[in-house]
Length: 182
Image (cartoon, rainbow, N blue to C red; front, side):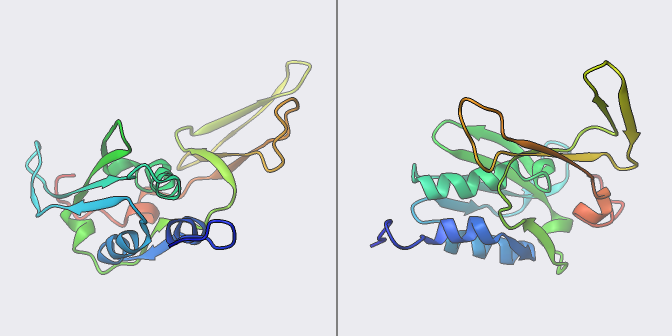
């Protein structure tokens, strides 16, 4: 039994700490972390494009700590390229290519929780306007990571901060491409 007044459960701790390791280690870590949620790893198969993929299904089980952990994973920019679909009730489907599932390379699957509400990595240029209409613009080789944080949220007053950091290259995020159809 979990005493929610004094202790954090395994999903809360996992969400805070994040995980770095292999694909097999990530799956094992996630299985251990979920309290009522579930994870199902299917046997490798061919996707619609003929690639060998391992389909992974996750579900929150309706438990708030599991929802937070799986929500952080679902919003993690490092995993967006593997996302297939999300479903009512907290279900998510992922497809991981064979080069990822069989690799012994350690990668960051979930960064430790840093209080950031949301991340977005899609822009190559950033433009910041001043109140007089002028702006400063900067370009980034691999795009940028936008992170929004609102540490002392007051519903009546804005108190958030938007952070803009250079995004890592795709090789840094996912490892070098192997030439296999991706």
